[in-house]
Amino acid sequence: MIGQLMFDVLKLPPAQTLTILVISGAILDGFGLYDPLINFAGAGVTVPITSFGNALVHGAMAEADKHGLIGVVTGMFEVTSAGISAAIIFGVLGALLFKPKG
Image (cartoon, rainbow, N blue to C red):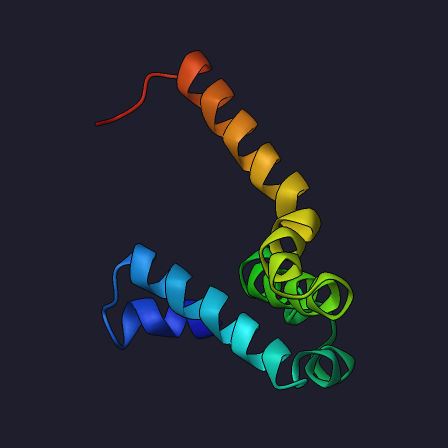
């Protein structure tokens, strides 16, 4: 609903809306507010856009405690690597199977 309001009211393009939602999920997790928000709002908050930002920060913070600065970089991608890989694979398959516009 927030994303749709950003489209309709603020007239933001999809790329900016996506970026704002991912960063807001990351900021909420950084301040420890994402988990209480999940308990309050339920599945509406765990949509892939905001939860991707949450997963980036959550993984980075968990690995930073164990491995320091290098853990920040590796932790982000350890948690989100499956989602990133799936997006790349399905993007390539979609481009091969269908005629891309553009």
